[in-house]
Amino acid sequence: MEINIRPWEEKDLEQVRAVIWQSWLSTYVHFIPEEDLSDFFNEHYSSRAIRELRRMPGVYGYVVEALGGTIVGYIRTKYDRDSRRYYISSLYLLPDFQGQGLGGRLLIAAEDHARTIHEVKRVWIGVMRSNERALTWYRKLGFKFTSEEPFRMGKTVIPHLIGYRDIGILAVEAMNYSSLSRKMTLSARAADLVQEQRRVWELLKNGLEALDECRRRTVECNNFSVILQHNPGRISNATAKIDLVSLASRPCLLCQANLPKEQRGIDLEGDCQILCNPAPIFYPHYTICHRNHIPQSLESHMDIFLQLAADMGPDYLLLYNGPTCGASIPDHLHFQAIPAGSLPVEDDIKGDEGNIAIKEGRTILRNISRKGRAILVARGDEKRDVKKIVQGIIFAMESEDPQKGGRMLNACCRKRDNFWQLIIFPRGKHRPDAYFRSDEKRVLVSPGVIDMGGVIVLPDQRDFDRLKGTDVEDIYREVSIGNEHLERIITRTKKILSGR
Ligand SMILES: [Zn+2]
Image 1 (cartoon, helix red, strand yellow):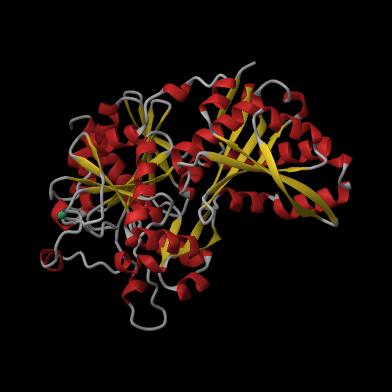
Image 2 (image 1 turned 180 degrees about the vertical axis):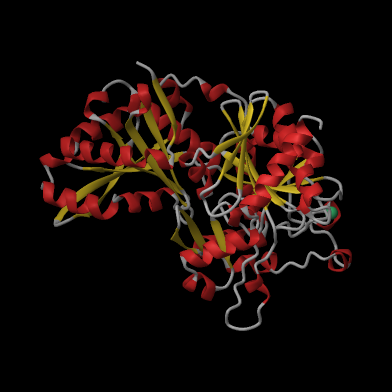
């Protein structure tokens, strides 16, 4: 049977809901009234609830995809940063797909994630005491159940046994896990760096704790949605002065000599270094900077950008902010890396195929037109062609607006299954007019790639409380470029690529 295990995506969620419900019906209905099950399901696994659940910090999941793309099973995990415990929150397979080793494979995928991303050596689980079949299965895999806790589902209270399993080599070998021997990946080394740095670097420790306190809410806009994040720790980034005089009069925070004495990094090829971002928006959140004090520019460093995306692997999204639209340190080349799947736009562009604007070899550039701001998506497996298209766009923006055109874009990139996918946001403006107001209508928002990608970072709580979908649409419209402008850029890019 053709089976694929991969991280869950937004498009899977309706099928995941069906898997949960059908598994409950076949298993739990023996000890929980169906009415309680359905009340609990409707409250905690509505379409909206599960969408929000998937975006919660620390929550991760994998699905089993059978032939034809049908989801037949799923596992969901949660890393609790306070207790440093990694929980298996759910593991379900459709009845017809049980007993074929798929549950074990889901568990391995989750444990691999636990080990490489959160550097834990133990996973935890809660299983209903009455669910004897599951308990037997978990015990066979080496889980030890050590305590009992009540869990309420509707009017029924069911005792749960709480257990753990050490992610030991023996247990893994027993399951014939072949990829354990692979060498430590860059993303695993980066995960180590965060754990190491939070122990010795107070600023990072505080930043991570502040991130835990951040409130988030989803706001529906016309044909897309965004997440607002109230993050007071981002105030200095949001208000950073990036004019030449201000830049010249301060020590560069990314130059080696000026790094805090506790800060350490991982050296990479191409003269770059991974550092932990002390004011994180996601967990983890890295800054990747060049060793030398050279200006922020994507067109000159496409090779580094694409290589970094490949090195960080499919679990990470690499980010770039143009020097005049989001980079708070525009005079020193740097990128960021965050967990893939963190930005709503990654899902948005799957639901909107857009128009194919340009083809270069096997690389395709699409124009996504209905998500409230200008979005271009380049996808290809040949580095040379991807590079050529992106440079073409930037040169076209420059010739459209020689003053600032080429500096006005944000981009994010992920390499997966041999393909690079770049999402590009051409920009017309850095900050909206509301940012510069001095009255109560001021909105402290300074959009960069993360905001354009659908996570709007708001240091001021008042903004977090009051911003509506239409406000977000207005901000996007104002800082993006219009359709005609975008069409001109595409036409000009085509001319540049064909050498005319
Ligand atoms: Zn510097």
